[in-house]
Length: 147
Image 1: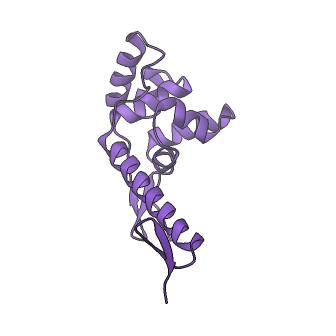
Image 2: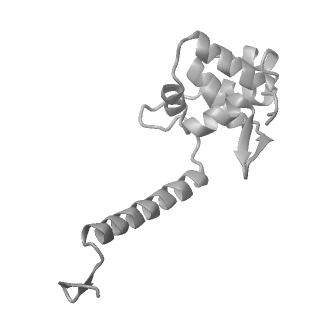
């Protein structure tokens, strides 16, 4: 299966991260994005329904990734060919940082994913109870074996 080539900013980000010996989970956390999304952006594609589709990070996401790696706005603009993300990176560098402030802007998709994970965890716990009680059914606080 062929895949799209990563865009210039993705090539720059991967090259800098690997040259610094930084692990993807560490930098993704520092930038406030998921490991999966960082990887998709570095690779230049995401897989959906068995197909590889080109992906490009938003200017804000690319700017936060670059900030985490110490890439300058000038380098992001020239080598990465992302003047839009370079402008955001300049603003990130100007803004005073509160250590309690998240590195990346809030993403509503994260809330949705956390809610889905919570639902899945509840389903797993219910399945564990079913397995643990071996097909028993609770009835008014008392368990009785199903025939």
